Length: 148
Image (cartoon, rainbow, N blue to C red; front, side):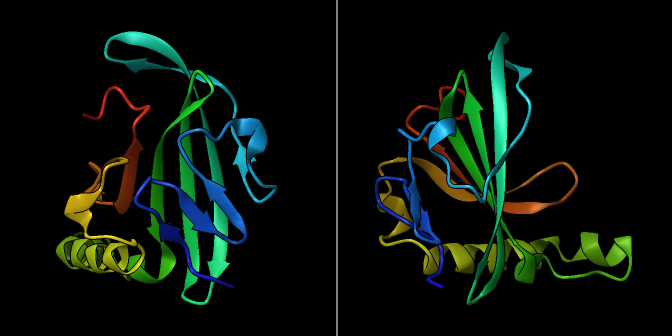
């Protein structure tokens, strides 16, 4: 199976499908599980939000893709890679490895884009970590008004 790739336009291509800023929930392939609609605060306003998640097996291992839809429109994609996250014996090992995981995600991203990252015109793309030190690739497309 071909690896996941991110195009200059922000489209994610993997496992025979392509997902981009025009993709709607009803157009997602069967591998995605669509969550319940919830209200999230976006720039101080309540916005109907849904997530869709898929685990995609590739030659490089398992890749997890989470899509965020606001008012039915795709605004962001988040990618984690099992091989990079690894398994940690203790919480201390997990927290100590955050810098290493950020570097490894950066290398992974460079291998899966078809352009130099500073040339990306489809929104915002990069590597980030959350408050719990989980590291991931993010892609905020042109529909995203809060991640500018």
